[in-house]
Length: 285
Image (cartoon, rainbow, N blue to C red; front, side, top):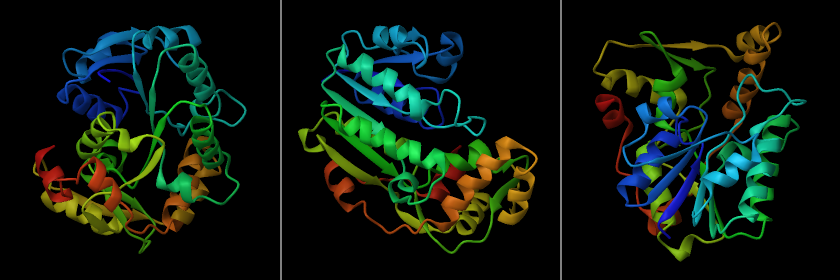
């Protein structure tokens, strides 16, 4: 299996995964809205198809001649339950196109939060339903359940010279870099062991959000960073007046109450052990 289509290639984790797939020697096609912008963040050699997941035909075009597909879609803070949503509706378009194609393997990025979730928030329910649809589409699959990605620090938590955290939970997460995860995705396309498997995706260190933020700030070299914390209650209050922040508050509520244990030994054995610690990630970005 050498030809893979990536859906969500220009996202926070889509970029490092696509780079690692290229590094592993795969022929990559990316479905993107803006080809010129995509060329600025993705490696040379990627083939581009213009379109998005609301357009079935563009998805189908991106899958021509592909043998595998990596799907990296997620709900955005601005999304609403009664509107088109990648995980509620986009996945239906993607799976429709896959069934019209010659795809032999689906790799799908979910999350620990979705896997462990037992509440009624529509965003998490959509994530869980998305996984069910992938598993029941009669195409061999690999589902990834990541812990927190280190890229969150440089793509949202860092504002100016501050690292912003929410709440003060003592629950730990095993932070992993997108690069290490990308290598695991690439390895999953090279082994039949990964077929119809679900993998925990975790890094080398279990850290609370505060511990991780402090370690990132301590090792960041471009400027001096401080760490601040906002009470979850304050974020929920802001969410009463800003719908986007309401979704963020709901997400943080789920994250702060998620109890994560280390489960990635099988992933490491079959797809490779991560190599990057948070201090190394912070010092090189």
